[in-house]
Amino acid sequence: MIGSAINSGFASIQSGMKLMDSSAQTIARQTVASSDSGDRASGGQPPEGSSLISATGDVTRALIERRQALYQVQAGAKIVQTSDKALGSLLDAMA
Image (cartoon, rainbow, N blue to C red; front, side):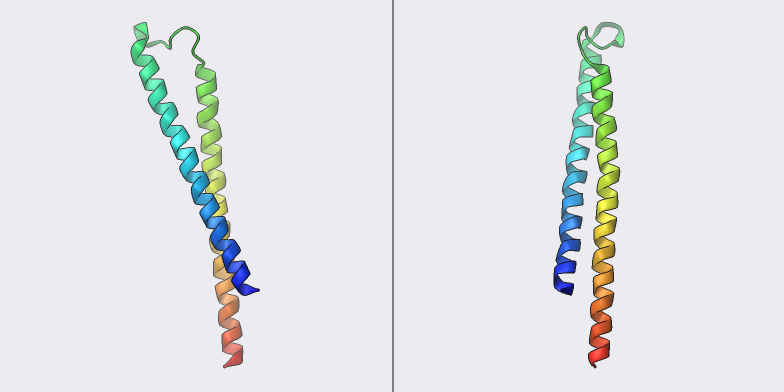
C-alpha cells in the first residue's frame, strides 16, 4: 500500500516535469516567433495578418501550465515524503 503511494508520488512528479518542459518549449517558441516577426516587419510592427493576441494567449496559457506543473510536482513530493514517514513509523513499530 505504501509502495503504491510512493509510486503515485513519483508518477505525479514525472507528469509535472513533463508539463513543465512542454510549457517551457511553448514559451521559447513564442518568444522566437515574436522576435522573428518583429524583425521582418517595417518599423518594428508585426506583419499584416499576424495574430499578436494569439501569441500572447499562448504564452499566458503556457505560464499557467508551468504554475500547475509546479504545484503537481510539489504535491507528488509531499506524497513521497508522507509515505516515507509512514513507512519509517511502521518499521519503528515492528522493531
